[in-house]
Image (cartoon, rainbow, N blue to C red; front, side, top):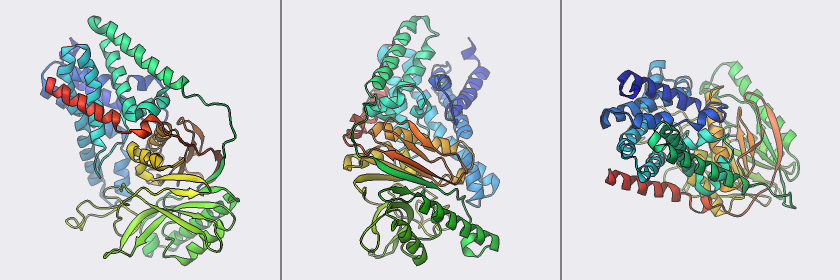
Length: 507
């Protein structure tokens, strides 16, 4: 009877949204995420018609995203130069858009749940996965906080992704939530219990078939991650700000290179985070390039981020690039990878020619162009698949690096935009899932933290505190072979799209 009360339904939607958001907290644990999506299925089952379910689901999503990503508003205000009210308004518009996916799910799944047959209960989670995949498509896709990421600490969850990927795990999370919700229905309780047992069996099998074998004679690579703890700066530091700002810039530069010289040893890979050398550029600042050569002369390889300029095209283009400098005879040998998935309104302006007045949030002046190919970087036999910042949240793009031959994954990022919020922790989770999906160790370098070394099962072997300048050393084993997910990363989402289409036609 409470489900028929509008006030109860509103409280369920808003409270469920808060519950959902806290599943992406710093350490959500296990119990809270297990039932993360239960309120969504409860909303999809409320009486009152499809339009009511759509609006209640939309409210659930709106609250969930407002609570989960409030750091977007502060970033726009502090670094984008927008007034506070405008930043909050833009956050609200983003939450309204993302919340619409929750509303569409409740609208589409409502009548399926009313049918109550086993096939309908299988199709409902597929609808969720299909919508989640669509949310990440296109240049402006935003596959942040996938439902699967709520289970980051659930035993066996990361192991299962080597077979079914994050989207497949999202299906299991949704199926678990639906089964928990249906336990209140006596007629469906037996089927719900069977579904819970099936999910538990899948996770257990995935875990026990992915155990680490005895250490072999695999070649190990020494890695040192430099976390210089350089916070975001403003354009005034470059364009002629106060003397103390220039002093901070010089201090950051000195600390960065002091840590790098400390980290450099023959045969070691030293990894800088994104924007660590800003505002200096490898190809335009001779002193900076000379200091880099001095570090590499110590015998290490150095992976760093800098703008790269292409003058061969009719119009000069800039790329957000990763440079790998390796020791050579005379000057260091350079390899580059250009970031392929840029951040809208951060690294480029969509329809920029039509919107010339829109300010960019990128540090470097001018808009970036996207890279057009996956380039792997060779660091003394370790083949690096590099993802720059936001690229790590796209599962199929990281899998493409593995299919090309990457045996070690690296992601470099600048999370100083967000301070001590949930954002650095939320950004770390996709890196753990990409490692587990592809069966590859992963090295993460963040300019203010959280830097981490992650093993092939997605476990964090070493990490760094936020707002601390350190050098984190570790040994990793580059791995070959391909997981089922790496071979066919889109198999599960496309299958779910087909099932969702069948469910809509059946509805």
